[in-house]
Amino acid sequence: MFESLSDKLKRTLKNLRGEGVLTKEHVDAALREIRLALLEADVNYKVAKDFIASVKDKAEGQQVWQELKPSEQVVKIVFDELVELLGGQSSRLVFTKQVPNTVMIVGLQGSGKTTSTGKIARWLATNQDRKPLLVSVDIYRPAAREQLKVVARTAGQQIFEHPETNDPLTLVREAHKHAQQTGFDTLLIDTAGRLHIDDELMEELVNIKNETRPVEILFVADAMTGQDAVRSAEEFHRRVGITGVILTKMDGDARGGAALSIKQVIGQPVKFVGMGERYDALEPFYPDRVAQRILGMGDVLSLIEEVQSKVDQSEAEEQLKKLQKNEFTLDDFRSQLRQVKKLGSFSKIMKMLPDQLLGGFGMPQLDDEQSKLMEQELKRTEAMIDSMTWEERNDHRILNANRRRRIARGSGTTVQSVNQLIKQYTEMRQMMRQLSSSGMFGGGGFKSKMMRKMAGMPDFGGLGGDMGGDQSALPALPSGPPRKKQQQKKKKKKKRRK
Image (cartoon, rainbow, N blue to C red):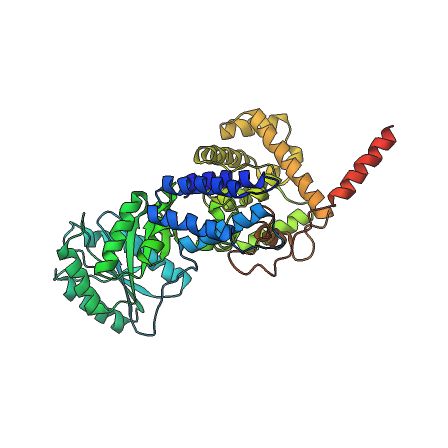
């Protein structure tokens, strides 16, 4: 998401950093580019205008940080304004002690309400230890209630059914009573939608709202529709009173105009974004983390949360110990590849890492096509390791020419590919041995230190990152000998040669 806007903003701000002395003309030129980038990203015209006016006012005012260069000050202001534009603080669903708490899911037909209802139920059960019950009151769309039944079963959640009635109010009353009697603390109501906004739809939603008194009314919008989604949300808010927005298909929206406009236009925050078709592909919306991604600062906190939820911690610790002892085998390498695959596509992982960190390793950001090629390469690598015997996976030194030919045939690759795999694996072992000798694995473990370093990496072209959560206790990671010492060693070698 936001790829188009992100590329343009990063390029504009990079040009600012290249200026030795920052003048008013430089700032005005940069703001013109930012304004165009926002409009091209389908951001509401008034929102874009107010954003530029606010940035300009602060850049030319008295908000000066002594420790920052002028260009860094502008980037800092742009970051702060982006966070504000996206909603400021992250907004969670608000629940009370009432049982059950009712949540209405509203929106136009085709926006993804039914699927989102299943995703929210799964997210609440997994992340907030709640016990949700789903009910569909869409009596107009053919098989709508049957669809929610399938969604609930796939998401592993419970659904209330009452096939004897087609009255929405009767359905919600019976579902509410059933939830109370059976211990469900959250009732999720999948309401009916239309292809357009009409009085009949709104009257029905108002009646359900008055009957159930929901703690949340979440409007589901298709992010791909841009400002149409914003206008629909505005009308629903005016007629029904929504408390938050769920933007679906955000993984396919390169512009992000709806996410950037909706809070400023209707005054209600984006609470969740749909990032794929799977029922676990729903993410809470964090304005500060999204702003970091847009400006190329990565989203390390989300990456850490992803790793903690999907990677086997005990297996990771075991592999770390093997790395420390230089006992990391091809079998361990295969296990590591499988762990990485759980995190999603390479492009998704890379976008969570700061550009500065990737640049330090000489790694560019990947587009979707490059990501697919890399994933195909990983599948070939895994196939080659699968074609090895247990002895070969645990001792690569026995891989002679005959064995390599057999592995190539078994995996549908070439002997050259097998040779390249062994070469990359031995180079990786050597690099890990060097890191271990430099002390990187000491004191707290490689993983924790690496995560701390990454969390401290995002910055505003030199400004230390303290965004997206409390990072004050995250010390920098020692990265081997200082450059001065390395330069001194090189000079000594040159003198010896002379």
